[in-house]
Length: 197
Figure 1 (cartoon, rainbow, N blue to C red):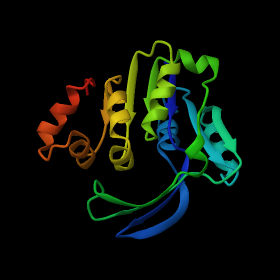
Figure 2: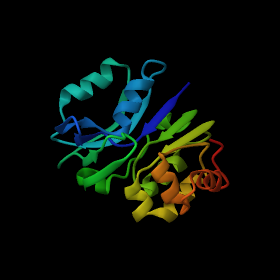
Figure 3: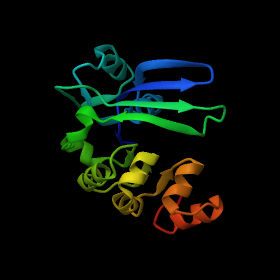
């Protein structure tokens, strides 16, 4: 099973009722690839700045993650700051600093274009669509997003949604994207756009 994961490898600043952590390694691509490494050798597509710790890249390699699609560019790594309350499904984004991610436009290595499974993790939907167009014949495509892209790029996000099999979102994101306050109706509305799950 060949798996390509496209998303953020980032720094997160997180606050919960139990404490605050500043600029810890985060990002959807980071954790998806490390989890998937128990079952396959995932290939990642992401960008980091020169401030990103080499030991994390070495961790990817030690877990069998193919990092040829991880670009290291001059500048700072993507940084996301959020606050979580008692309900971990509810969060407030405090700050999003795209940094090197802002101009990221990857070309997939040739063998990445043959992937059977593609996970379009939380990134700009225009970038999700561009990367998906580079993969020749995926058998399964899944995607994730957050409220930032739902608010700022709903049209491109809905275009990508029509091309995927699986859409991951929390209750708030589903309602926001569907423009429907009833969760069941919102879910059905989004499923009508293309995804099976």
